[in-house]
Length: 452
Ligand code: NDP
Image 1 (tube, helix red, strand yellow):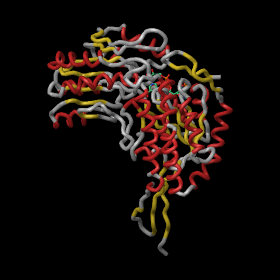
Image 2 (spheres, helix red, strand yellow; image 1 turned 90 degrees about the vertical axis):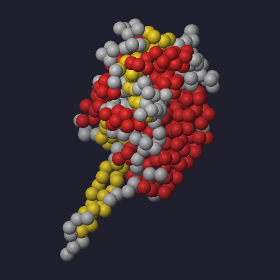
Image 3 (spheres, protein in one colour; image 1 turned 180 degrees about the horizontal axis):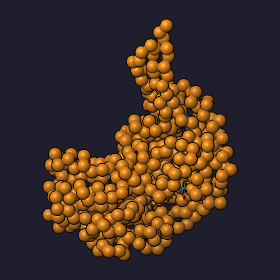
Image 4 (cartoon, protein in one colour; image 1 turned 30 degrees about the vertical axis):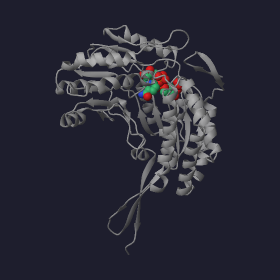
């Protein structure tokens, strides 16, 4: 059995039977059997089923929200917003089955057309930081394109995925189309990656595991999309609205207790703005409400596990001085106070590795060229922000930074309708928006000779 803990209390909230290789093989066989009938469902009907699932998720929003808030330790307001996004994601991709358009290409002697065909059974492996949200970014486009799926949630947070599978059946999704297996990644994840009947793996998690998945998938030439780690830059120029930049900077790092691949954990700050920005940042960090995830006022909860807390702590006792330290509750729960290290060199370990906890590094820069150089001096390239009132400088900097998702004068990263994914070692492929559909389909070219 797998014991599922509640990180705010350290108590067991559920026990589930642990799946092994046999259960994965069984789930893949069911998904394989369901594939033919599912791809044959008329596009309008497939669209209606996905819309029905979105409605059913909204109908179960309260229970899914509470489950996610308790199991991940995330603030209930955030969890509610995430479940709303899960439903929106199914609604968005419900528009796709009737819009998977091919092309007609002028050729000699006949007619040439392309079709977007589904891949078959797709294996989805997701992490614990945004369990249902990240699962929906993969399930919705995969099903819309006519694939069937086997989903493996993280061992620490499997509950919402199991609940989603139940809701999907209730909403009328045929059996075998969406399968969930719960068990250790090193066993069942590995099996999914090597299974000959799995056509593709879509993975979100650490860069280290992502490398192993890419290598394992090579054996059967599986399609792979990877959404991996980040060490994103929040570039603040001295001519920015410093109040706005400083007041949103804490949530841009400490949201989800920093366990966010998009966390803007390197605050690159123009040297002439350091004093004004740090003063505003300090008051924003100190007013951050850290505590019970089920309290509507809470802005930051605990970390996911004792291991994660130990890992995060190891970055705080390093070379860089602690400039600001917020509050965190005592007692049971994997709490860690929001922490700002400053000044930090971009060569320090805390600035180079993905900490995945509430720790921000402030790194001063002299001019635009140095800001771009520092922003790009990382193996990652997932997200980032630029704060300035100079529009030309903002766009110049945005074009120069090697990253997949950027915001100007904002710290937001994700919208259902826009592409999300990384440059460099932050990943391969794009999720969300129209781009995701390309990763769940193959292009088939058909030539029909018409001339005598
Ligand atoms: P992992 O990358 O280990 O886990 C992500 C998912 O992959 C989980 O479902 C996990 O299963 C599964 N998995 C683990 N090993 C394998 C394998 N060999 N083959 C196939 N699937 C596998 O992340 P962790 O949970 O261990 O977190 C470690 C660090 O990774 C964090 O501190 C953070 O730095 C980073 N991370 C980054 C994320 C991001 O979104 N960029 C998300 C999560 C973590 P199981 O849970 O059963 O181990």
